[in-house]
Image (cartoon, rainbow, N blue to C red; front, side):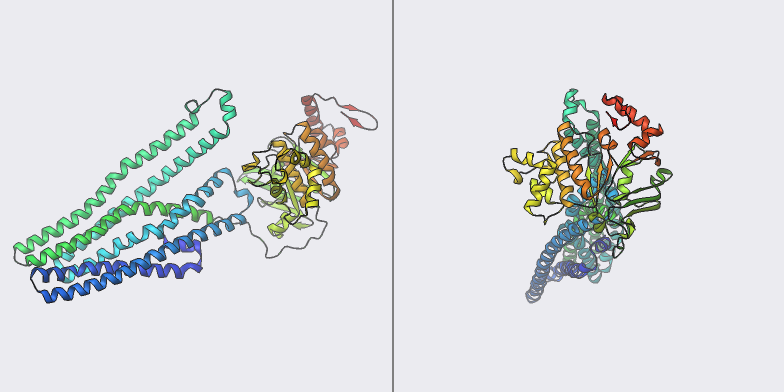
Amino acid sequence: MIRSLLAILGPAHRREVGIYAVWLLAYGVLQGIAVTLLVPLLSALLASEMQAVGFWLIALFSVVAIACIARYQQTVKGAALAILVLKTLHNRLGEHLSQLPLGWFNSEKVGRVSRSATVGTLMVTNIFAHLLPPVVSGVVTPLTVGVAMLWFDWRLGLTALLFVPLIYIGHRWSAQWIGAMETEVDAAGARASSRVVEFARNQAVLRSFGKNVSGYPPLEEAIAGQNRAAGSMLRQTFPRLFAGGFMVQLAFAAVIAVGIWLTLNQQLPPIELVALLALAARFTGPLAELAGRSGLLRMAGNDLRRLAAIFFEQPLPEPPRSQPFTEQGGLVEFSNVNFSYEPGQPVLKDLSFRVSPGTTTAIVGASGSGKTTITRLLLRFFDTDQGQVKVGGVDVRQLRTEDLMRQISIVMQDVYLFSDTLEANIRLSCPEASQEELERVAKLAGVDEIIERLPQGWQTQVGEGGAALSGGERQRVSIARALLKAAPIVVLDEATAALDPRNEKYLNSSLGQLQQGSTLIVIAHQLSTVMNADQIIVLDAGTVAETGNHRELLSLQGLYAHFWRQRSRATGWQLVETDTEVSL
């Protein structure tokens, strides 16, 4: 466990861990020595040898004083190390997550990271602050006492030490079982938490169908499953903990039995028996405490393994320095790209196209044809299985992430805003922008109209995820971000799919501004956005079926023309061709 933790923390903290380990061992040994000194002290006291009593009292107090110093150092070093470990884990976790490919972050993994960053890191720091001291004492002190018992009477010492392997096996078996059960309880808890969040987020839909908690089976089953797992763990844990404690008491009983037998056979003086039984009691005490802590230690070990699993996720390889661009930054090229999320299930197949700088390209196709996958590969959420994705003439794999991201802005359909002010959310794309630039992009994106009716204007808190704004208003803020960044490439991933006419008007006016200095790649269902594009790429089952502008593709009477007729009928529009234009 400590080896795994050191691997995560890195070599910088080995010295602190080593010093802490020395104080832990010192305290455990000193405890054992202090208890051992009770044997000659009690023997002298019962024999009324007062001079010897004084000597052994001084020796005992000296060892206890040193043990108190060791305990103080152990506590201080443990608390300091726990804080250091917590800080280091959070920093390293944040740094590592920032290097993982964006495609890694699905809902299940985000939930796992959230739990590990909160509960998991606290459980791991508890190893140093609260768990290791009693565990180390529970091992070192009994061993010290056992060796001392061998010195005083090898028969009693051997009897006590013979039970150590049995107690260890029992503790290990109990801890492994508790750890396995805790994993099941944790998984059941994660499922229940997911269902609770789902239930809370979908209240509008559930209430419209008259569903409350008792009428929502997925939540009921998840909570029932969590209760079953927790109940099963409790029912089966107590017998195992009892078995561990029973083995400890059995060891003490065996020492008593052997001691009495030796005394009855006049092989051990009664006075020495009393002293050695007091020593044996201290031998079994830490072992009993160890039994109670072993399960907690195993649970902390489970959290450490979950953290380690995150740290062992490999980021996409990056070059030490980005290769310089050989073409204009707004040029995008896909060359013979093959890609699949799962082996044997290709999403893109030998896909090639070119987007010229300063043009607008619309990508259309049926659901599952690979539209969003194209944007993910462009942003390097994943690497291609085969082929190249180039920006400015350079393979994205030859660009560092920060350099690639400087070239691209993205506007998604589901916009997430941070729990901060409206101004801070727009400045996110360019923190050094002047107030004049901020106001200019706000006006272009229609955010100025939002600011005017908000009581605190620019300083209005938008809430978590932008909850204080409507979906269309969040979209406008996202457009303002893209305008402020002024990246050579702007990707709109179905950003217009769910907008009302008013917000769509603001978006369309913003597109004109974006077109002046950027290459636009638009995944959209709005007919007006598609028909005005310089180039339209039609996807079919992961390949490019057709390429051209609106008029050229209509004249082909192929997949795009079929798509266009369907969309026209769905919106109630009528397509009329004239000699000079296509009007709706």
